[in-house]
Image 1: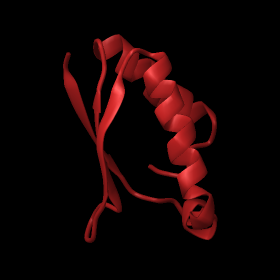
Image 2: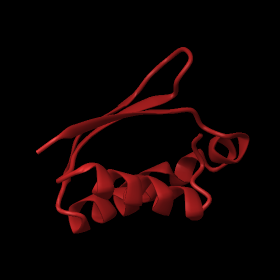
Image 3: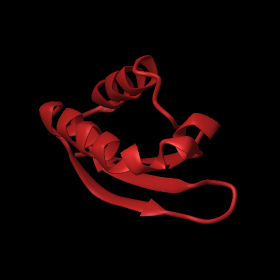
Length: 78
């Protein structure tokens, strides 16, 4: 299965609700598993990006659907 790397930058709203981060990550994990994939790694970083996610999914379509679903929920990353 293909692997996808996503770079995250938290919005101001995301920083204000940083304590909700673990719940958002759990919800994202459930969505990835429902799409037939799994999280291979999630790392907080310093510098230009705040986090890096590595996921394994069946195809580009599954990745696009997850990205759009996160964006439509008002995901607190950009």
